[in-house]
Image (cartoon, rainbow, N blue to C red):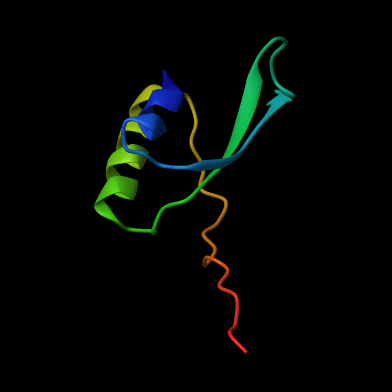
Length: 71
């Protein structure tokens, strides 16, 4: 299972969204947001396995974690 790729590495999923494919009936595209440092070993391993399992993978972006300012 694709979700197992994240679970076995203790990667926290913050969003999982499905949308119907515009190209094929009953086919869905999944958008996944998860917490991981870009380029970390865990990230690279998960991405490598994901690209082997999924028909299509595209990275839409990487964003820094929000940190509350003290004061």
